[in-house]
Length: 197
Ligand SMILES: C[S@@+](CC[C@H](N)C(=O)[O-])C[C@H]1O[C@@H](n2cnc3c(N)ncnc32)[C@H](O)[C@@H]1O
Image 1: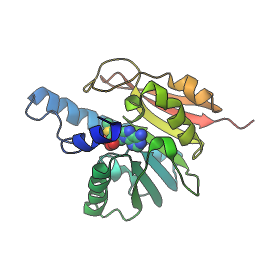
Image 2: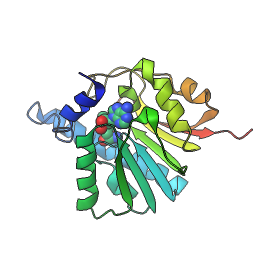
Image 3: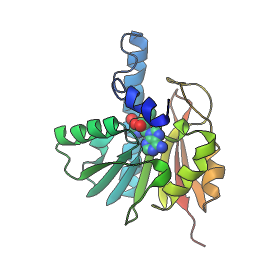
Image 4: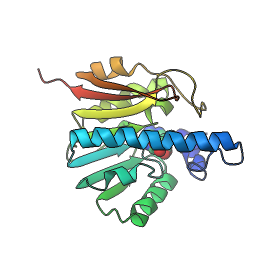
């Protein structure tokens, strides 16, 4: 099954995953989602972007964070996720968000963004493709904030890959300017900034 087919399949229960498995898992997913939103909200407040790109937005669980940003573009590989994300934006009345179907490894825009967010995307990119994806992302912003796994474990371990993000971004002239541990999820929020030489 291709990566795209896999995400098409997972789009059906992405937000409710864990239900029917155990109450503790549901609780853990909810707590995680709230912590994630809180940590990213702080970053957005700090950077005050007028434009933002989210790569691998899924059904749009982070969209409420973007309500005060003038121009937001969110992309995803899976057409079904894109459809769900558009629905989320519509339901929340967020006309500032445009959702497009696009592969993270082949991003194509005519402008750059004040900030890029990836949340639980890069950890799903296989080793053979990660350099292409990072290189594609780095073309579109000087500030990239990623929430990704840095050691095995966490809620969902299917199709996950560990990458050396510092090394990958350093190869494109970025340094890690902020690093925060996401409580109990073996994840980090990492803020990379391009260094001007
Ligand atoms: C685990 S979900 C994360 C969704 C969202 N960022 C969040 O935190 O809720 C990963 C998302 O990345 C998307 N994705 C996976 N590979 C991708 C690629 N190469 N390009 C763009 N999106 C991709 C999947 O379709 C899926 O929606």
